[in-house]
Length: 206
Image (cartoon, rainbow, N blue to C red; front, side):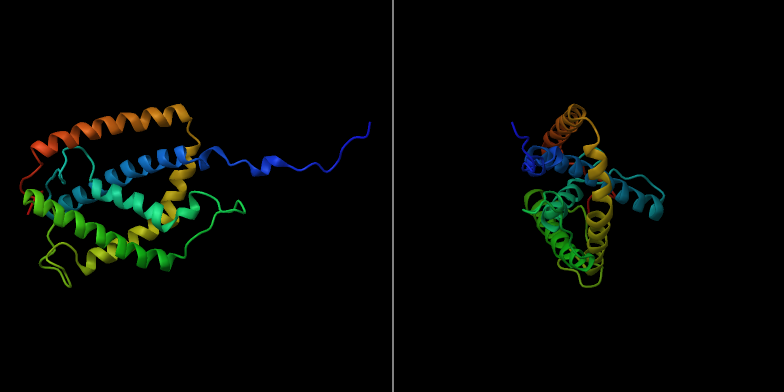
């Protein structure tokens, strides 16, 4: 019996575990809470530097600002979807930093405008006000914040998301599930409380 040679290697057609939709969704949940927490720390630090006081920023009570978390997920899904899943050739494609910058300014400003208007319309609350800033639109967005979104988009899409994605997939699947479930549970409770009694006060609402 002749030994068969040059059999097709079907292992190359297998998609790695981290490329399944379920695990990409898990990664997006992790990105959401990471972005929300980083945004919270950023805004708290701004008030610490400016006024020397701690302000529990945001509509919610926990250490997170969902607007940053949503932005983080949108940046990842819209600006770098080809880096989450491979194309037909099995390769990952990257966006140019300049493209990421301009798309981030549009995406971030659009998100900030929609959420700012929604909170103002539904609860008559403003958690930021750019009325005194150059090229602002009704205090919801301005040129400076748009530029900030552009820089944040480059840092996130081109650098930090890659580092965190690699680290996340090195953790066991069981731990990832428990980690996400825990924070989702706490977040839902926080949202329920804030819908009844929104977080307001000096340095929080305007």
